[in-house]
Structures are given as C-alpha cells and as structure tokens.
Image (tube, rainbow, N blue to C red; front, side):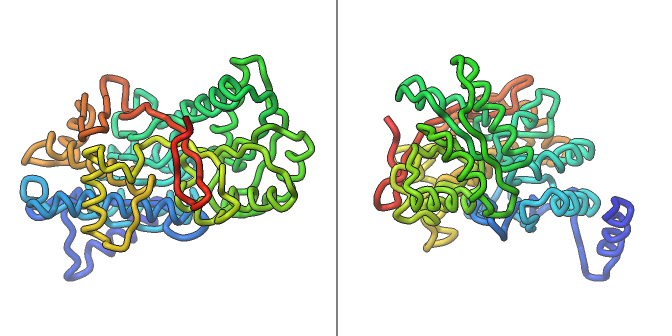
Length: 381
C-alpha cells in the first residue's frame, strides 16, 4: 500500500465523528506508544513476550500515577514477522500521528524495513528485539537499543566453543534473510580471528520450518557444534530431527530464538541446548530490578511465568519511562527525542544501561545458558 493511500485512510479515520486522537499520542491524561511486532505465526512468542513485559512496566508506573499524571498506554498490532506488513503498519502509525513513538519491535528484517521510515519521520524507535548492527549507528538519534549486539553474542559463542572447549569444527544454521546473515557475519568474523572457517552452512526460509535439507547438508560435515541464528519453531524442528537421526553436536542459539518458547517446543530434546542471553536471569529475585519485574508481571497477569523475552520487554518499558521523566511535564515528541539523546547512566537496580554521544546501546553483557532436563535454564560456567 502506498504512503499516499495510507495518508488518505488516516484522514478518513481522523475525520470520523467520535474518533478523538491526541496529536503525537500525548494529552493531559495519556501517552500512547505503538508496538508493531510478530504477535501471530512462528515468531509470535517473541512479540507477545515483549508486549507482556512492556505492559508490566507501564502498568507498574500507572499504578502510582503514571508519569507527570499521564497514564502510559500500549497499542500493539501484528506484522507476522514480515517486512511488508511491518512497513504498512508503521506508515499508518506515523500518518495517524496518535502515538509518541514505536516500541518493542521484533526482528532484524522488519526493523531494517521500518527503522529508516521512523527515522525520516522523527519517530522514536525504542527497544527493538534485535542485535543488528545497523541499529547501533551513531547517527540514529531516534533509536534506543537495550540489548547487546549480535556480534557480541556470536563472539561469546566462539569463545566458549573454541577457546574454552577446544572444538575445531563449527557449522551454522541460519535464517536466509538479513537477520540470519548478520549472525553468519558475526560467526565468520569470530572464527577468522582464530584462523578458522565454518565447516558447513545450512539455511531455511523465514516463517517456515523447512530445515531438513539444511540438516542433511550440515550433518555431512560431522561438526562438533552447530550454531543457530533463527526463530524457535524452525530451530526446534532442526534439533528434534537431529536427535532422531542420532546427530548430537553441541547446539548453540542466539537470544532472539526465544529461550522459553524454544524449551517448550523442544521438550525432552532440549536438554543441553545452549542459548546466549542479554538480560539477567528472570527468576533471580536477588537482583532488585528482576524482583520488581516479577511483581509487575504478576500484577498484570497472575498466570504469566517469568522469561527472558518479557524481562527484556519490561526493561524496554522502564527505559521508555525514564526518558519520559527526563523530558519533563511539557512533553512533546521533540522533547522526548531530546531526552532520549541525552540519556547517560541509567541504573535500574542490578541492571545499568550506559548511553552517551554516539552510543545508543544500553547494555553490553552476554552470557550463556543451558536448557536442563526439566526444561529450565542454568548458567554455562
């Protein structure tokens, strides 16, 4: 759909009797954020997890009066983890001008398609669930990243597998798009530093679980480990098929996979699978902000279980709130962007984010976890 058509649609919506929207999503009572993310399909658990964490953070703030008396509202729409749908929704959000910013996007291909549109429109783009390097460009003053980069995650993988475990043969499964190729580049660079190359590569198409061809190709190389850059459903399919074929290398996954969803999909086949993480253990209440997250999560959904994705969503929500507080009572989108750009050290209690000139990434920490026999997670020492 063209931007002109979207403009016409938005004009009709705004002219509809009884449909009242505040400019920029700000009025005396509310501030509204828009989330465009995967809420259905093979990556649904990621968008839903981010949404749940954001809702927990916003409800927590709203329970004590919001920010300067304004309630924070999250409105989410499904893009199915498809760039074209994401573009359409983001253009609609921009044209309607009824949200202060975009928050909690999911995925590299969707962010690659929509971030330039948001940047051109001077629309805040906060906490995308991706470690893609292009979002860390120092020129992007409308973007705030919470998590470490994919290059940091892939370096941590190879440090563990090669430097610590002494493995000599590493293969990769990756999603055949911008997300997967970012991971491929990170692994390749980490291996090249050590005078190594990949022993095999396999790909699959986004939003499918068609991984058998890739598995058969990778299995021929008999690698010590298979590192995986993908979403939880195809990754789980690959591992389960591998187990059936008695192919049992060490499997290592990127944080984007969605740890809890992956463990659920794998069941008994998940024992020993490694996943890199970029936020603290969601079950460790000794970390003050994690204890706050657990309480906020229970308040918004008593049946919800803590998880890495929703904790990242919660931290993203807390960061968005911090920028609102810094922007002050007379909130506008421009004053919000200025506050985002001026953030420096943000201490949430056990989690510290550090920003500065040319640095829009809050955290740099990466650590490895392993799925246990009962489907929970333990640190990899």
